[in-house]
Image (cartoon, rainbow, N blue to C red; front, side, top):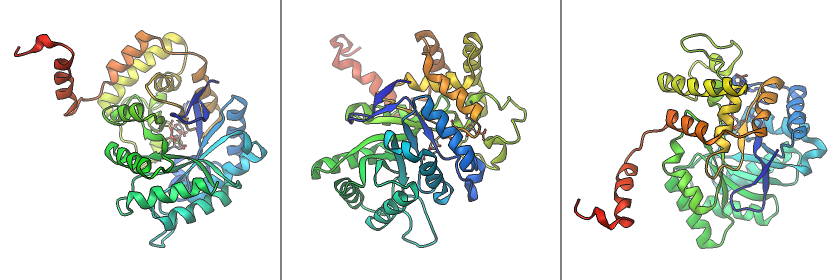
Length: 344
Ligand SMILES: NC(=O)c1ccc[n+]([C@@H]2O[C@H](COP(=O)([O-])OP(=O)(O)OC[C@H]3O[C@@H](n4cnc5c(N)ncnc54)[C@H](OP(=O)(O)O)[C@@H]3O)[C@@H](O)[C@H]2O)c1
């Protein structure tokens, strides 16, 4: 296992992070896993043995159960790992028990600490933008938590790029702790963040931690074109797939993934995950699993690297659209480096 700097922070995190969204299985979350304590502990131990030092969960996963189970599974090893959790989602029917208000963040942090069985959270992530609370209120509260020692680093997830840039500027203006990482939906079938977020993170020194890197299992190749995937797989169980994949485009990309996987005698999942490890600003890829054999497969992603020609093939097959203003700026940037384009 290799370790990378989380953005510009002093933290070193393993290239793979284990996500705990499949732990617990309360309510909606049963669809994504429902692992009990014994099954979860097995995955956590496997990850630790492979050198994973980075674990991700959230208060909302299984209504708090995922945090409790992860805390228990880590046990005494907790001090050796970087533990990330999130706040923002709705935790009860109380109108204020959601969002990024001072009220909810303070309450949410205490509750997460209790469930995780720890006295601090290494990386506290706002789970998505809150359109009600002013950013100053959220960022000032997060800064207070760092000053109080309850939280060590701050991260964000699921923001528009302009919202993230505004948040960074506000933190800087007040000399508050700023976000060190962005957790975003990023995979071979979802490269949307390359338009705005990736350049922003490069410019501002944030580490990117992709979530759902296999698009909920699609990129493992176990859902055949026009056929049935395994009945116990998340994408078969979900009536309405949370992570929509355009079939035509998705299977065209998967064809290339599978061709490279066959040639190298690797799995499609390993190729798909390795692709993200080659992308700019990625600090750690957050993997998920419901079975030990899936985790064993995914952990083998780190022993090798896609070469330049394989990378180029995958890039070409999955090239996203270039929405405005990208295509315009790609044209106009030339006249700052080549005087000969004048009037032509
Ligand atoms: N910030 C956010 O908004 C956000 C959102 C989502 C996730 N996350 C984080 O990202 C983590 C990973 O997300 P994810 O679970 O959606 O990741 P994913 O890699 O896209 O999907 C993982 C799922 O795919 C299947 N799978 C994984 N490896 C496989 C393999 N080698 N072969 C066959 N099937 C395989 C398993 O589901 P089945 O067994 O059911 O097929 C597994 O649970 C979560 O645990 C969470 O920490 C964050």
